[in-house]
Amino acid sequence: MRLRFVVAVAVCGLAACLQATVTNGTESLSGLCQRLKNSASFVERLHAAEALAEYGGRAVPALRGLLQYPDSGVREFAAVALSRMGPEAEPAVPELISLLAVPADPSVSTVLATLARIGPAAAPAVPAIARLLPDSDWRVREDAIEALASIGTADAALALATQLERDLPDQQLETIMAIRECGPAAGAILSELVEFGSKTSDAGLRDEVFLSVARLGEPALDELVLLLDADPAVLRRCAAMAIGQMGLAGRAAVPELQVALRDPDAAVRFWAARALGAVAPADPRVQFVLWQALSDPDADVCWAAAESLGLNTMARAGGTTKGAAE
Amino acid sequence: MISEIWMRRVTQATLSTALAAALVGMAWYSSSKNHAAEEDASVGGQEMVPSDALDEEASSASSPSVTRSMPACVDLKQALDGLDQARAVLLREAATGDSETAAQAVRGYQQAVEAVRQNAERLRSRSMPDEYRSLWRTLTSNRNDERADESGLAEVDLGILSVGS
Image 1 (cartoon, rainbow over the protein chains, first blue to last red):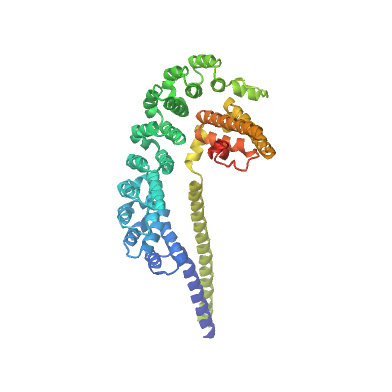
Image 2: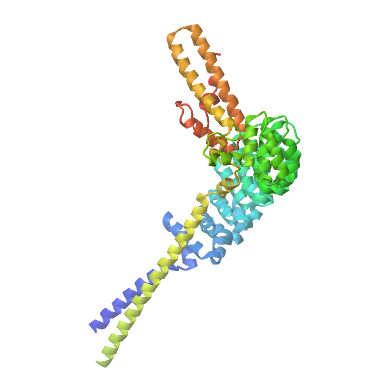
């Protein structure tokens, strides 16, 4: 009898251990939701959120419910769990949007990060995020800009372009970088970008704007080619630089770049020479004008022409310290 | 007696099964955790390396090391050396107390600062923003000027040009 009792206790203990081990691995959804709601421990709540995230899409309905919970801490951990799922959390976008409308909600940064992780599927949230942009809290503004950049739709790019006009000068660079992250969708604001780049007085910012335009590739080429004829010279310089950044996609601009190679401004000629080498390096007509540019009165233009013709590379490879331009 | 033996065997079998199941369960649990950790690491990795940085490197027309051979860069380097010399002269002459030579040293210093400013502007207009920043760092890193910081030549940016004027 005693043996039976000992065996029964041992089996029960082992089973309990086994159950505890298995339970930790696959705790039920409802159990995890309870833990997230009721635990006083930050770490335990975080673990519960991470465990919920491992359930993927199956946990989304429960988490949508938790996003409407009165306790902001619960809402925040629910958003954390959703952010770990990435695009799989898309069904929760309406609840996340409604949280953005709550004034001074402490979970707003987490909600914005979650929308950023969801990416383009969170596009319906763009108007709600855009409303946060004029927020006086710089952290909220930064999170909102990051979220719009990750969503990366044409609407998101448009919201960022609107913000660009409102931004203080030291905030504009960040917004430009966010627009660049939107990728081809930023093509929707091409004319706004070019206009902004044309009127800004900050040289560094102007360069970044035109580099963002260059990222749009061929659709931006016509606008840039028009600028090769614009005044002041600094715009022609930026246009030539941007076309050069397009690489072979800027090939159609070769005739205008050849004209720019005779521009009165040396910086324009410099970038025209660089651009010609980048967009059509093997074109005999291009090589001909570049050889001509080797006798340009400006030493930097000569250097650029030599660089585009590959002469500097040859000089470097030959071990000589004297570049072809010299 | 027979039933006790039978009972003992059943118990042993149950224990072995439970133990094996526990081991399998723990192995599965740890592998799923490792998998989740790997996924976390990959997600974290994506965050740490902005895609822009890679794109920019790929799309950059030339590297700063190439641009360093550009005449604008070479001239700026010389202008910076000239500024160092002009500053040394200015400090030396200021100590002597001779107002005429001190005024001459101030003029030389102003010219040197102006030369740096012009060449810096020339280099800025002939390099990409990231190239320009990198070149500034390279050119100013070896200078004997505590005021030259990472963002550029503080001496010029802070308007030291006004010295003596």
